[in-house]
Image: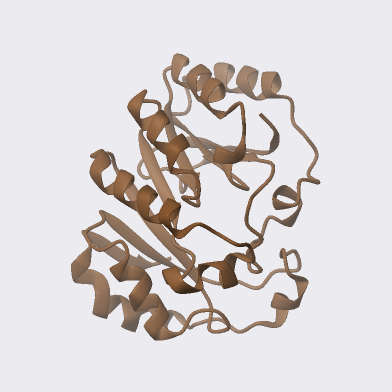
Length: 228
């Protein structure tokens, strides 16, 4: 289990809970707009697992949950045992995933190790490889969506969108892929000095007004649908 970041307190990552967020190192995608290039490329400084668990043990009376994000957590060989140790502390666990490894997701759910799931929807299925800059097996993402929708757990899907990669029609198509989900969020791309693809620093973004107009077209497919 490789950990490259620890946010000690967050009120945003786990809905209605005080949480700590852990960033795992490594990812099987190379999304150009990603804000965690060191994490994704595996060059972030490693934080010892024992140090993270020691911190969580000391803080367990002050936080409710732990969010595990990345990178992509499901590529970590030690994910299951790490989550088990968090659950033994009496903390809730939220998992962020790109959905590429449904077999890992299914196993964690079968063992009741996950309390909240968030999955990224990167593109319409037919454009996935282009957006994530890797060859992919689309069946894996479709399986993950089905697993999440049938899980009965609190969940959300979210999409970071920008005009260079996602047309208005693309965004609506992405929403149809997860129709009936509990929550769907459109995330406004924010340029940053540190992106996986530095050339995307100059890319434009959708305005909040433009994204809210799209939300109006798709909001009835979800219990909650909004821009963030």
